[in-house]
Length: 365
Ligand code: CP3
Image 1 (cartoon, rainbow, N blue to C red):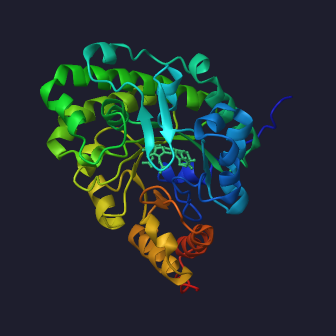
Image 2: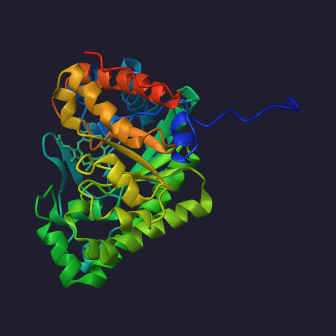
């Protein structure tokens, strides 16, 4: 079939346009951890299946990814998987333990352990992720973005080395400071896995990808520069060479790292809630987009407070192109669904009036 002479390519999803800093009619919104415990229909599935079981079965993973979209008009769907999925794919024995997080059977401590981490062949090692993405992209409304993701090398390394979640990162930092060559080899191997994993996700239909360096805020800025930034920079540079989708870089507790992070090559920097959005954006630089940054605990508050606090984030963004609304970290266990739904609606309404140039309406309770 020949294309009509003036046929235009369909516009990119709202979130993608905002990520590139294009003017938008309202601020796009999604919530980290929007698929999951928040929804009773997810909790019901989890009685029968583990998290990894769900992510390994495309029909279930597609269903769970779409569950939040059936409840509320968010502007993105995020692949249902875990940051540990590619490591599971190359044969690292691990479990995701409820209420704890990732637990590794044999933590990575020696040179031999590091060298055992082979490259990832996405279509062979995690075919279910690619099938889930292809199916999702076919099913989603064209204006809704499909977000792929990966854990960043520091955050993955911390789970691999510690063997489980940690508050102090003692063993991780010990490898960094005491065995820097081994540390860099581990980071390089994780970086290589991440590059092929994200490239494959983009080829399978992801409209944007987010690199979760959730725990990198544990580092001082100098150490971030020396031990982490070169690896993150390599990942974003490799993705930019072969693909053209927005790259979102997110971490928690990163207020002192934002200048360093902006130099790593992402399109969008995710801000947590500890930095006021306008201050964080000024540090990132207004030539990059930002994502964030409502404290997820605010979803437990009355509707009027949610509206007011969401309005504060929007006022700090000041209608400037390049803002994606999100929480400052994932939805907390026990979050009331009603609060999350209210947030989505109030951000749609308030941001539409800001972008239309009229005064935002007063918060409704
Ligand atoms: O909507 C979504 O965001 C769903 C997809 C998703 C999951 N994990 C499923 C999941 C995503 C994007 C992740 C990323 C992830 N996993 C991160 C980065 C994001 C962040 O929160 O900083 C991290 C650090 C992990 C590792 C991990 N997995 C942790 C710390 C936990 C919590 C453990 C707990 O029970 O409190 C998990 C489990 C996990 N991954 C859940 C979900 C929906 C919890 C619910 C369940 O066990 O079903």
